[in-house]
Length: 243
Ligand code: ADP
Ligand code: MG
Image (cartoon, rainbow, N blue to C red; front, side):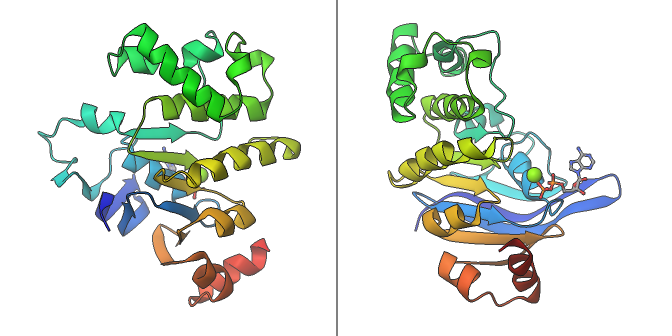
């Protein structure tokens, strides 16, 4: 299987606190990988290192055969290949829905406004919000905002979409609509790396589940392996607390 991103010996410390320890891990093309684990185990830091919101302290991130952490590597191209969906949406609040989905395309990818508009409309339809193009974020529910954020990320047509607990900030009644969109996307062959506490969702959509604890990958495998037959005591204890 062809990997999109391969991480080797990745580490990250904040001061003397080592938050990621010697992480080896890859995401293959078309694969949906869910990362689970207790709060504070380093899941967000792992995603933030992958998309370079944090500078890793050590190790390699190999993309298209090159270590993008090499000092002379042009990271701008790499950055455009990763889409990110945050827990807190991070929409541009002064811009309407359509413009939120266009600015990255015109500014970063240098697409024409009309091309960008067509692409944005395509993905706003996918998330079911093409009727809301003129709305401002404050006029939308949390679930709608997160779906705009997903459409915005999709509009950049990245190689991999990263999600950091995309439903954790939502009222319970809005979690379902966002998970439904993500499930549909997972079925289209998109490459997705998802940090989530939604265990039923992870079981249903994942090709692979990664369990992290205290900065290391403790165990990874198919949903069947991790949820039904966990091998490691830490995985077992986590699942016991969660279910
Ligand atoms: P998770 O997403 O699994 O809850 P995080 O990656 O957010 O875990 O955090 C892992 C650890 O790193 C926590 O102990 C957290 O306090 C620490 N941490 C995260 N970001 C920073 C930061 N910018 N500065 C200092 N410590 C941080
Ligand atoms: Mg987190």
